[in-house]
Amino acid sequence: MRLLVAISTLLLIGCDSARIAKLEKENQELTSKLNVRATSASLALKRECSQQAERTFRENGLKKYPLAAQTNHYNLALNKCFIQITDTDFSTARPKIITTKSIWDAFEQKEFAAYTMFSNDINPVECHVVSPTGQKQVCHSMEEFDALAREFMDK
Image (cartoon, rainbow, N blue to C red; front, side, top):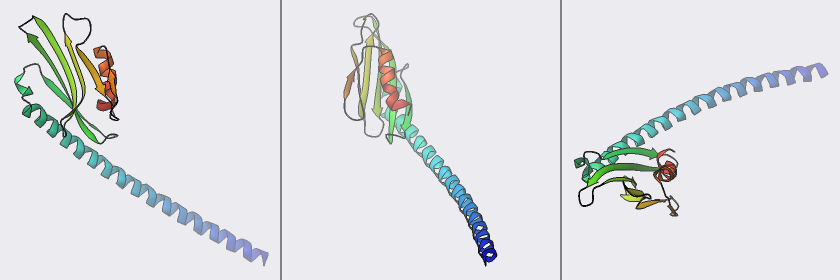
């Protein structure tokens, strides 16, 4: 009788191991399929972000400035498309080089960050970043601006 119980137990354990192995394999296959879908969705969002950023840049008349440029980034964590616009211009009223940077939500046209510096000034005329939670942070250099902007453009 004990022999029968021992054999039955071994058979059940063997069946459970095969079932567990099968379930683990199915789980890996489903995970792989989800990863493929997530990658596809992410690529589609990045493409849409890039197209919208280009439209925003063009529609705001920034393409006419020879030194103006834009970079865009779809921020997965915030589920938003950001555009960073940089420009360097020359003021004829008072001979100065003006450097500007700004970060916008490309779809909502909402500004999150701004930096303006005149070449012969020590400090920027304007330097602030508004966090996604709405908190305004003042900065005092382009390095500080770039560090704060990473929250939008690197995640």
